[in-house]
Amino acid sequence: VKNIAILTSGGDSPGMNTAVRAAAKFAFDKGLTVFGIRRGYAGMVNDDIYEMEPKDVSGIIDRGGTTLLTARCLEFHEAKYRAQAAANLRKRNIEGVVVIGGDGSYRGANYLSLEHPDIKVIGIPGTIDNDIAGTDYTIGFDTALNTVLEAMSKLRDTATSHERTYFLEVMGRDSGELALYSCLAGGGDGLFIPEKEFALDDLADLVNTRRQKGKLSDLVLVSEGVGSAAEIASKLKNKIHSSVRVTILGHVQRGGAPSALDRLLATKMGAYGVKRLLEGASGIMIGIESNELTEYPIGYAWENKKKINDNDYELAMILSK
Ligand code: ADP
Image 1 (tube, rainbow, N blue to C red):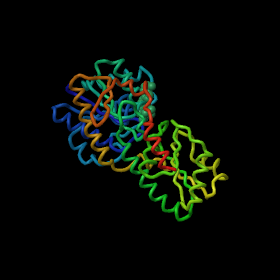
Image 2: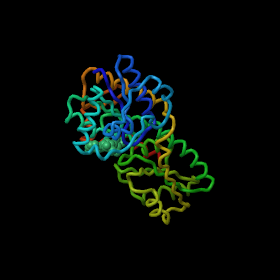
Image 3: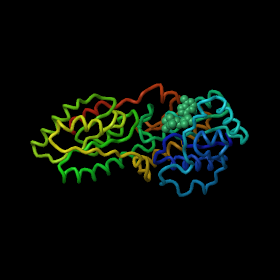
Image 4: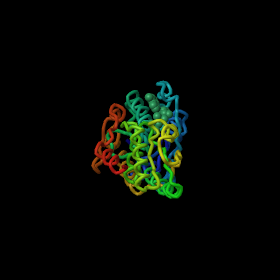
């Protein structure tokens, strides 16, 4: 492998730039030519591919978002466009691609590598949702978690001053990871995640008991995968002896400078992805488990659903009482 390409795809996450930088710098050190593909698979199909120079990855280690840009590309679901994309890679002698994205991006990568085995593909998990099986953490999750914690501290101030119950909706798609760890680390007073049942009446009882004991406010975490915080709040507002408000954090959770943990993760994974390409690996995803870099066949990501840690969930339920 002499020429490689890097792309970011799907929803952006803090630390994608850090991973691009690490992959590119590692590749430069090994004497490789590195291409950047703009807007994920859209750039691969439309031939928006450029040779990267060291200056292209200079000063981006701490920048949120992705300087390679990202997009969703419907065309990539069709084999004929993937063939066009592969042809665009071949004409530059690109033999390996590092795909930084979520499990949708991994599916695209898998088709590309199966249909065009001369092109080696490595997946690196970039998403704030932490919803990819085979890795304890995805790049961007820790930063998003810190963003939620900051919001919780600020909300807690106004919630307490006005003696209110806040329902805070956080992202995560179908995964409750972000809400669960926000609840544990931010001192949440209730938790709704798609993986577990929590009766609305039980929450109402908890809030009402707390009011009797003198607690002034509550911050209840609602994962977007449950439905909507507004719906939960409206079902509960007549049962709770406290005024109710809803805050939807939304896309602020996607932004910001990556945290130290995300930068370390992105740096290790980005470099390791290129190392494995050079060793001939293809069709794999990089992960981290018990602080060791790991790899799985890329299909592992969608063939297995990442499980919520039951002990952590139980602890969150005890401490949020
Ligand atoms: P994420 O990678 O964050 O899960 P998406 O699900 O939007 O984000 O996927 C990103 C892109 O990956 C899509 O726009 C598409 O180009 C490609 N992709 C997703 N699923 C498939 C699939 N089943 N076949 C081919 N390409 C896919």
